[in-house]
Image (tube, rainbow, N blue to C red; front, side):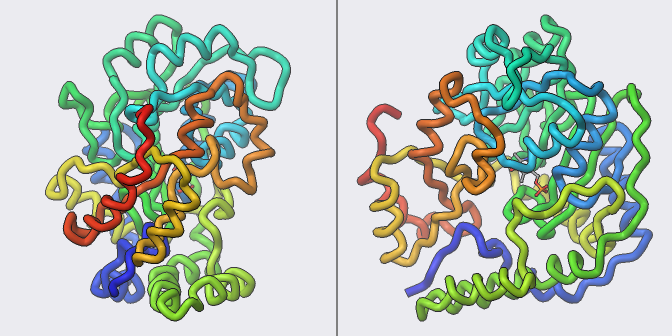
Amino acid sequence: MKHYFLGLAGNYTRKRRLKHIFSIGRKRDCLELEEFLEKKYGGEAVLCKNGRSALALALKSYFNRGDGILVNGFTCYAVYEAIKSAGLVPIFVDIEKSDLNFSVNTLKKALTNSVGAGTSRPATPKGIIVQNTLGNPVDINEIEKFAKKYGLLIVEDLAHCAGVKYSDGREAGTIGVATALSFGKDKSIDTISGGVAILRHPCKNKIEAPTKLPKLSDTLRARFYPLFGAMTRGLTRVRLGGIFMRVLLKLRFVEKSADNKLDLERRIAKFQAKLGLEQLKNLKKSGESPIREFYLINNRDEALKKLKKNGYYLDGFWYEKPVSPERYYKKVHFPEKDCPTSVEVAEKIVNLPTFYSKEELAPARKIIKEYLDDGE
Ligand SMILES: *Cc1c(COP(=O)(O)O)cnc(C)c1O
């Protein structure tokens, strides 16, 4: 029986893995990446260590300490971290079940109770981060109207949606004052880590671009993750994958994605700039498919067990809490009362990867269908 994985670099074929381990990047590759992105999105491209650093740099460039930022109430801790490190106040907005994004409806509600998470003082919203969750685009025309009406600057987070088009044909990343790309694990551009900020409008604050190269230990971890992922996937067949991964984490050969530090002094490694550029150039060919399919189901634990028995390891879904991972959730002080749909979705969501064929995933889809939430 073949096994299928949502995470553990399951999106890396053997060929891609070898290329990742052995590719050599040069300064020229970094310059080419910058040039390509500047042309594609229009603006100044700043190479960063990861997506959260890129987002923090973008936010710092356009907002002032204490400003409120409207943010999707179903997101990654990386986004929260970026907002906080820029000295801003996250205002979480409830989502719609249909696309896992906020809507003008939920945004309006958030404005009436816009108390920032973890504070008791209301923060004045000055910005809005558009996330296009899992590659599902927001209704950008409505969001733009809303932003204009309330004087909000739009920042686009492309971690899930590089290459995605909005319904009016414009591409994600070409709308806001700034755009942040992540090259992290399982993102739409995946070189295990890395990020780029694109400053599309004149900045309010001048933030120095990172100049240092990444630490050797971080670069080595990024180099070998696809290999360690493949070994773990292999060992899962003999039920040793879990133990092996725990050892790798203990030895710090592998780092959990959420623990990748935000750092505004360091940039992406040159080899990752090179591989990221290649993937960006291929985006057009691969079309506009979402990075993950999602289903809302009941009895998720039971469903996941059944899936596992059939060779589908899908427990790395996005997201298991409104702000994930679970181990950081408490820190966020998430306003569950204001975001009931986010809470519900986090309890019910499962994802299917999009890098396997329809046929390979058919049995998994069948199992998931048994558990589908009727209210969906
Ligand atoms: C993963 C992610 C990021 C950035 O993550 P990094 O690990 O810092 O590259 C940003 N936004 C969203 C929605 C994400 O899921």
